Length: 328
Image (tube, rainbow, N blue to C red; front, top):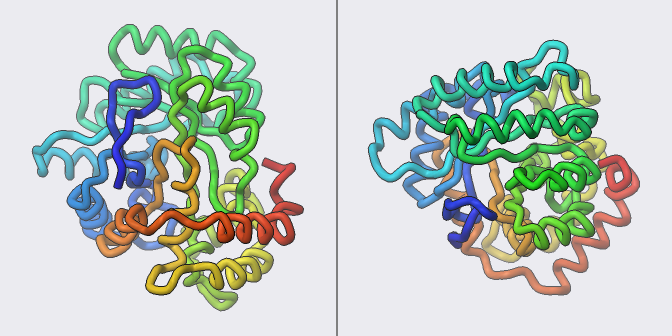
């Protein structure tokens, strides 16, 4: 794995990090023991960036991270969390300084720290991005020492472009993978220009790009790949990257032909993301230690050739883009 600066912040992170949604919940039955083992394996492999949120398992993910880091006692990795999705209803009016401070205080307790390395607004309603008072409040919380920096996790490219107009925003988290290629146009250009850190999430399209899912794969009732298939619980773009399941399976078979001999499709998909120099860190999740180690090893694959990159673009434009490109 390569190490580089996290945008304008004084952190150095690996280009592959640990996405901690799975160890929190909404991915079927993952025990705390497996979650701890996955995180320990990621850290043993050298990862120095962890991404979580206050709503992952209602704080379970944050608490597991705190316990593991306390037990290890070594130099801490950078830990990013998110705030806002605890609002019920999740509306722009709820993004007040008081509410955000309450969420931040809860994460400070869950993560057992005095200051959060990074807090990200958690896919807020678009109206929030047109409320400068929200960002003024985050500036005040940063000055008070409760957060070291703040960013925004977004669903749509347009939201990312709006968010980075605020000078205090240091990072954007966005879906970017073989099935969601639109960010690698104007948005990445602007992010580079402003030295923004880019966190690439949903890198395997909820497992589709692992190549292990078939038409007959069963998803548990508490797995978002079951209950959010049509966007019933949150933005459908978070599940299978918004690609219709059957279309995704068809595209996977074409991508499979491009995977180098001896490599897994998951490693190939992660290496594809790392071909963009705009991406600071990609955050695949892991259900167990084996998956975490495999994610770290993906960074060691040889760079993909121009022909392979062109082939993935052709598959995207022919099969995937009609369903996702103008939507997100």
